[in-house]
Length: 116
Image (tube, rainbow, N blue to C red):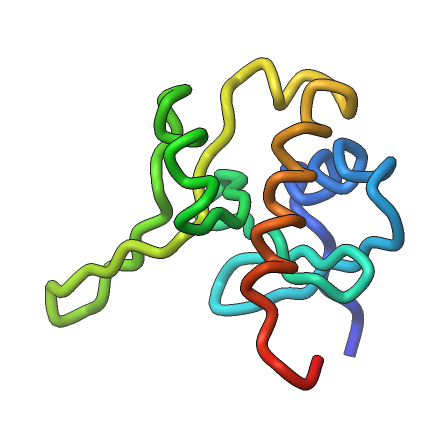
């Protein structure tokens, strides 16, 4: 079976994240998950990039107008997950993305499950 081609937003996000370290991307649940040095720190869903946040960092994303990722189920329920959009200017260059991506990596590290 041929490998699935990466969407433009996923390829672009990989460029933005390139200075972080060893990256890999994985198709999951109709979207894409991003790992850096084995930390799961970002997702692309519905052509939007979201970065991992936690109790310590979510307010920073919210303060700049970030929106949390919401999962909507077929039965009408929805759930908010701790992944947030970034400011538009962060999407313009790897340098602009770095503070946001590093915050996401820090949140991923703080919330890493034991044994990993």
